[in-house]
Image 1 (tube, one colour):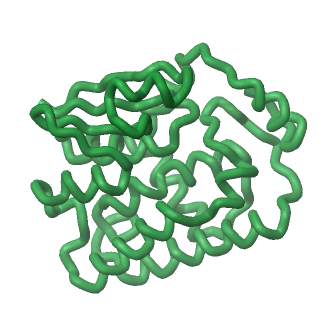
Image 2 (tube, one colour; image 1 turned 45 degrees about the vertical axis):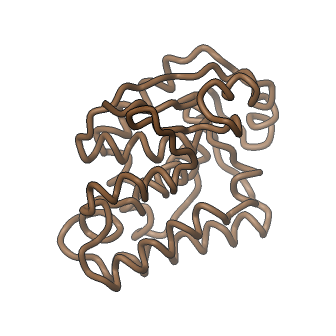
Length: 218
C-alpha cells in the first residue's frame, strides 16, 4: 500500500494536492502526518526534507506534481482524455506549481481563517485575475462534468489550495470562477481535509498578522 507523508492540513498547500487526488480516485494509501517543526525533521521521510512525499514499496517520490505524474502512469484517467485538453491541463498545472508567488506570499494557506476581505495589492490582483482566466479557458475545453476539464483531474488537485485561499480570504470572484470554487468546496475530500485542518491545535505566529491585514477570525 502507498504511504503518503504530509504536513499540516491547515497550512500545507502542497500536501493537499496528492492527498485529494488519491482520495478522489479511491487509491488506498496510509496517511502519515509529520509534525510541523522544521525541514530537518522531515529528512526521515525524504532527503531534501520537503513534504509531501509518497512511498511506493520503499521507493519515494517527492514534490506534489511529480507525485501526480507518478500516479498518473498507473491511473491515466487522472489527466483528460482529449489530447488538447490534456496538454492544457499539464500547462496550467505546471503554471500553478511554479507561479503565483505574490498570492502565495500575501495569502498563505490557512483553512481556519475566515477573513472579512479587503484591498489587495496590484500584484495579487493580477495573480487572481490570471487564475480566473485559466479556469475560464479550461472550462471551454471541458467535456461533461463540473470540474476544470469536466471530470476531476490533476489540474483540479493542483488548484485545490487556491480554492481554499480564495474562500478563506473572502475574495470576490466573477460568477464563473465563483461557481467552480463552490464546486470544489463541495467535494467530499475537500470537506474531509477541512475537518482535519479544523481539528489541528497548532497556531503559527503569523496568524495575528493575517487577521490584522484582512480582518475576521480564526
